[in-house]
Image (cartoon, rainbow, N blue to C red; front, side):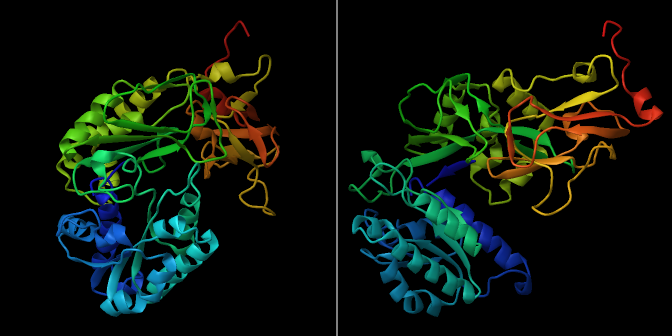
Length: 443
């Protein structure tokens, strides 16, 4: 999804605040952890407004976008510990419904140990949540060479059930036209970030569009240099996207004076990009940038669900498959038969980690000799932190009917590559056998 902001981070925070605000104002309080009335942004000079003109501070801009005032509880120079010290006075006493927390930069500059920084942040979030308010954590990418903080912000958000805006200064730092000094953004211009993921689109069980990880070898990787474009790459041509880490392969950041101009810049740039060997969400991003609702900027955190409901799903899936090139070429049932037998091979749809059981100590999904229908879960395939249940229906070549599990090949925890053999099955009853196309006479 695109991400944009104060220039560059405004919309990201707007989306997160809107999500909490939407739930807090439409769901009975007994069903959602929000209780107060006000919106408060707690932070350091980035919140206080250093580098911005009066009335153009970050809380003011976000408040204008969502149509509700946001209390500015920023204090220049604050570390996480200093923000904690004034939490009661400046935040909790304001009866907050949602609190946005943006601190950590001064801790890094002053070499405060990360353990101390995130202990203070954890206490801030815990005390806010204990009052019944929602929390939006705004993360920073901090480190001279590598990011030393991003994973800690993510872990904190997951542990506390908070919303997260990661790497909020991504695409801003180092760009003089977007900065008032070496640390603080100005209030001019616009930046937007597209996160390109190794994902394949599918139609889910309820007919909704869903995305599953698509690890594999990158055979073509073309992202040309262009004015106004910044790239942060995680892979390159000839490299392998493994199933062990996050699916994001490129952060693509565009810079332009206005939002319409940066949308046009990114949309044109995506037409020059080529990635093959793995599926990506680039066609989805192109469709979003073309969407009238997105272009008008009148949306909230329900946008993606509503967008995928109105988009031509079949055409989008076809575009993603075509852009990827030779990825998991479609097979018919004859290509999977074992010659001279009635047995059929079941091959891995992508790389991943194979699991025979839903959890340690629990029974296997299936055992040799079991008879299953095409909807029965046979295994889990883990890739990029996601567990994907696999049944015969997922392969789209097995007709409805019953099949006997003849053999299970991988062990639990074993890494498999695309097209590795997972199972051998055969039709279990005459009706299922009749539904299969007859083997080619040459076999």
